[in-house]
Image 1 (cartoon, rainbow, N blue to C red):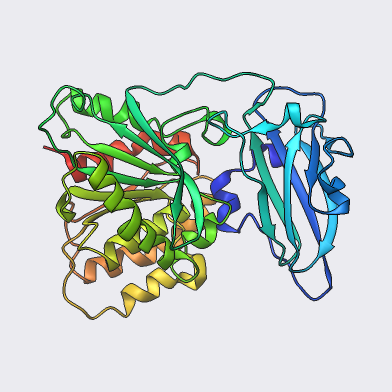
Image 2 (cartoon, rainbow, N blue to C red):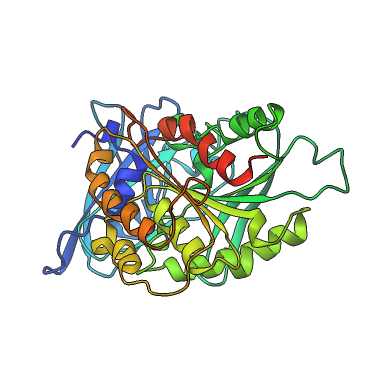
Length: 379
C-alpha cells in the first residue's frame, strides 16, 4: 500500500482501525506519521513498555522512503493504548493543528490496526499562520456528553456579521471541520475552500450570507458517521448540544428551513441521515461522494422500505468518476431512483450531479461545493 497517497476519506470508509480478525490474543499495530515540516526523527512515548512507558527518548520511529515515519508493535486485544509523539523529549512534543498541546492519542485495540497521524508543528517550533479568508471563531475541546469526547469547532462568519448587529443568518453545519476552511489543518494541506467559495458566492449575489460551522472529526470518525454504530449519538450531539450552543452564541436563523448539513464520503452518510430522520432540525443535506454502500447498503434499504409521508427536505448528491468514486457509484445508482419514487422528482428537492474526472479528495469537493450552497441558500 502506498501510504503517501492514502486519503483520509478512503481510510475512513474501510475504517482507520482496520480490524482483520480477533481470533488471537494479541494484535499487530502499525503507526504511520506524516509531518508538515521535515524532521530527522520522531519518537513515541506511551503507556506500554513497547511504547517506552512514557519515556520520550526510547522508542524511535522508522523513516520510510516516502517521507513518513512508522512503528510496529504488538499488544493484547482490548488493551487501551495511549501515546504521544516527540522528537526525543517533551520540549519537542508534537502539537495539534492549532499549535496547542493535544491530549493523549487513545485507542482500544480490537484487532490488527493501522493508525494514521499527521503532525503539523512542534512545541519548540513556534506558532503558525492560518490560511483562512474572513473571520472565524474557535471553540476548542467542545464536549459532547452524548459521545463523551471532545473536539474543536470552527465557526466561519459572513462578511456583514461584524457590521450589522441586527442581522441573523442561516447556518450550514459541516462534518470533517478541520478540512473545510484552513489548509493548515486539512488533510494533505488541501481544504474545501469554504471560506473563499462562500465569500465569492455572497459577493456575486448568488447566495445569501450564511454562517458555517465546522465540526472536527475524531478518531472514531467512521463509527460516528455511521447510523448503525455511533451515528445516533453523533446526531444527538449535533441536535441537542451543538446546535443549541451555536444558536445561543451567534445570531442565527434557527428554524429547519434555514439549517443545512453537508459532508463527504462517510460524512455524506450522516448528513443524509440527519435530514431524513430529523427534518424538524435539518431541512437540507449535501452528500458529496457519499459512501452509501457502507453497512450493507443500510441507507438504500431504509429508503426502499420507507412507507411514511413524503419528505419535504432538499437533497444534493454527487460523485466523481475516478478511483474510489467508481466503487461508490453502484450504491448511488440504486439510491437515486428510490428517492425519485418517494417524491424527489425535480432539482428543487433533489440535485444529482456527476463530476466527470473527479477523484475522492478535498480539492475535488471544493470545485463543486458551490452547487449545494446555491441549492440551499440561493436567492
